[in-house]
Image 1: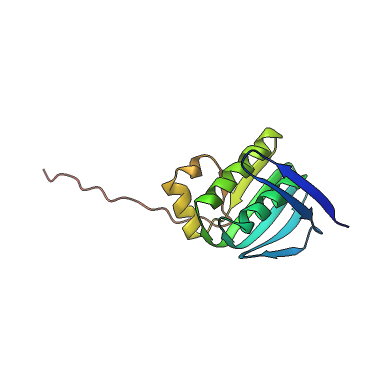
Image 2 (image 1 turned 30 degrees about the vertical axis):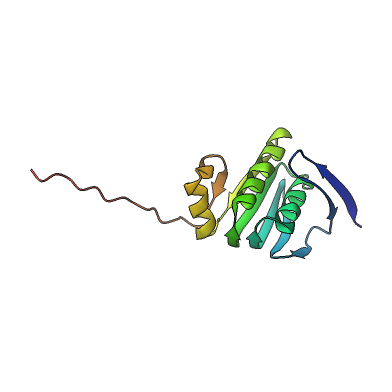
Amino acid sequence: MQTQVTVNNSRFYGSFTEEPENAVEAHMGLKINTVIEDQTAILLCEGQIVRGEEINVLYGKVLVQRSLTVILDLSAISRIDAAGLGILVACYQALLSSKRRLVLQNPSAHVRELLHTTNLHLLFGIAYSEPQPHTYELCEEAAG
């Protein structure tokens, strides 16, 4: 059974078709597999989150979830651009307005670097399956 969903946002407008929950979508360079566990929807993303079809698909897929928490597993994301970062913020805002939560899980090194560079890591809840190595800056002490 397919359900037609129309999203009307001042910046993003499009129609999306909800497919069976475990379906893998292949749109341009992004695949999304959805898993529902308890009150949480986990969207396993693979490929690129870049301007074009990819961001529209991701935004629509996040909005059609009925779960209180939506987790985007970004471990297999090879590339994300400014439009991709913007759509993550738009997803965060859309879920927040309906009293739901967006969590980014296991962002790839590239995504993690961009989140830190743009300070978006301060906005999102970020979860890791395994502890991440910390980067320490070396401080030179004055000899004295």
